[in-house]
Amino acid sequence: MATLLGSPASHAGDIDLKIVDAAGRPVSNAVVTVRPAGGVPDGPIRFPWGTTMVQENVAFSPHVLIVPVGATVRFPNHDKVRHHVYSFSKPARFEIKLFGKDETRSYTFKTAGAVALGCNIHDQMSGFIKVVDTPFAAKSGADGQVRIPRLAAGTAQVTIWHPLMKARNNEQLLLVPVPGNGSVSRNISVALRTSP
Image (cartoon, rainbow, N blue to C red; front, top):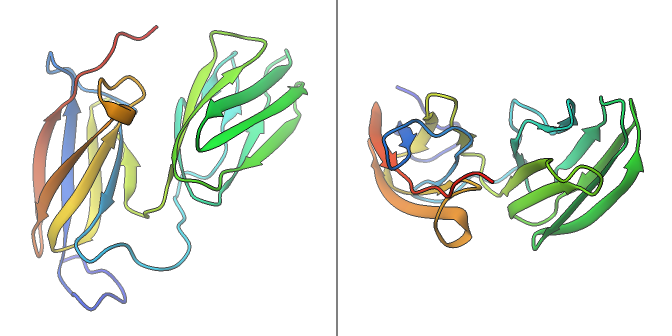
């Protein structure tokens, strides 16, 4: 049985989700965040995947990056051309003016929310940074699967966000009962807009 260290409730369970579109196809890059029963633990939030979004092959990689509030994201340019990164999103309005191959710039994200990125030079470039205030966060892979482990037992608030979701703020909220041990599995269907 998994346990939450330092939590007065010694019981914990996992949430396993499969995110699919209206036709039943797996959806990748869906960000799942969870607020378990009893709230989130205090302390700094760190994720194993780091806080770097590379510009390579005239694209942002990864296309969707999850970072905690307060994270400084590095933007290394691995292309032979210069880039000019910007965002007009409410949680972070900024621009990083022209920088070239093997140069790196950075920006600190102070507010939770979804940040859409573009490049002033290359209109086809788009990327997204989901800034979160919970350590219980992950994104779906190519198979649409997401696992959020070690959640306190009780009803958890689960938010699913995707840049193409047809919903207010591109997200939907569910309430999921988390068992005292073991896991709960759900298939979640989301409506997506056609990719531009």
